[in-house]
Image 1 (tube, one colour):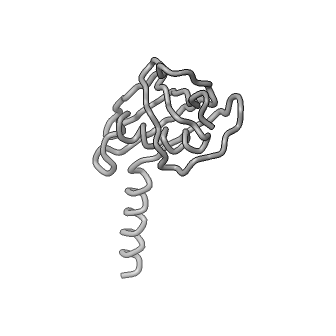
Image 2: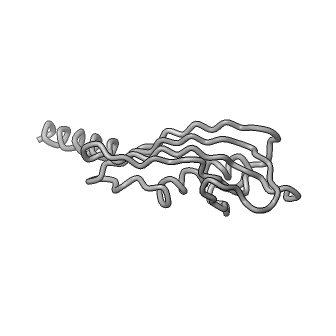
Length: 125
């Protein structure tokens, strides 16, 4: 009985562990700002920055994978924005400019690769 419970426990651990993960590289550039809460408000822009003046304070490269059957699909607007928001808030940023992104599939795994720039609006400290 103990062996069966151990086997089931190991199986569940492997299932949950492989359902998804994110590897994110953050590079701080320029001035250092006070981190904000991880769920702070962040504006998102695709390929072009905001109309107002800003300074670049960081670069983010994120690789997210999800098992389609256990964790759903890794998409830019949901998983990508969530990860980028958390990292941009940690840098004290106001907005994220998505420089490029790629969504791919391999078997049951979905992958999202995002390259982004974190900006701080001028005149806002």
